[in-house]
Length: 315
Picture 1: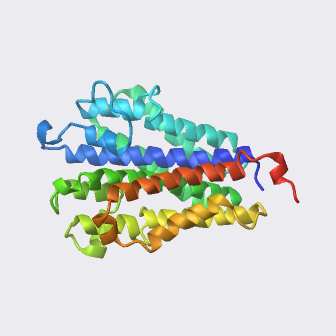
Picture 2 (picture 1 turned 90 degrees about the vertical axis):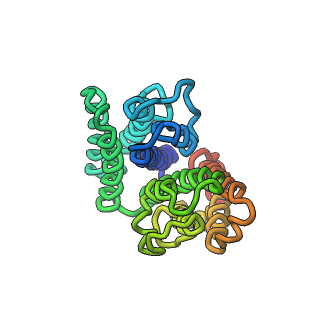
Picture 3 (picture 1 turned 180 degrees about the horizontal axis):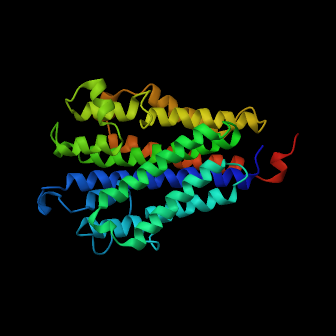
């Protein structure tokens, strides 16, 4: 069984990187959607972006791509910025250097240094998409290097829990924004395409449903598809699998409450029907998923990180 500090660092390393990549991808898509559109039609009005990230809007909203990047990527005083997330992930990686591969450390350190270099150069304001892609590709490279060079043991499972729990909560919040306002968006509207692109799902969706973008099909794909790695169902299944594996490594047989909550969330998505979800209250349904993610986090923390000495001793 891993030390609780090691489990904690690996878990948060993965969550912070997933959060940074999610923020960068949403910014990249929002900048694209703002091209050739009037400000009154949500051109450089980034209110929707802040709502999608569940970040409190600033007193003075960014008025250009440059100010947006400065706020959400490079502002070290902003706890929700990409740089803060990458810095926190790197610090967690530094604390567990003995548990991760040298290639993993080199990749996360390289991403951190590239971001710092881009900020100091000051050339990013004319290339906002470059900054977003730098983060997205850097996190993807780290995930690939991790899967290729780290033993898929207990430590790797903590990385999976962090990645997919963060992804499930972020995707549910993003879907909630769109379907809370969905009645005002007609099918094939650019915003529905933007939602799919925000989840790297446009091509996968088109292979499944063709290029006919319908809100109910978008919801079904991002909620209930069992094969797409950014769907809620896939993420819930991955969290459940990882928690069960961790319980076995810890000699517990079952992960207790964390296991049960993850299994319940997975089952609700396994047997969910999109027409029932949309006809009842999609906002309440998606909020319940966000709450489940928070409860799984709390239960896993109590079981594997902040547990008492007595509970870890054999009976």
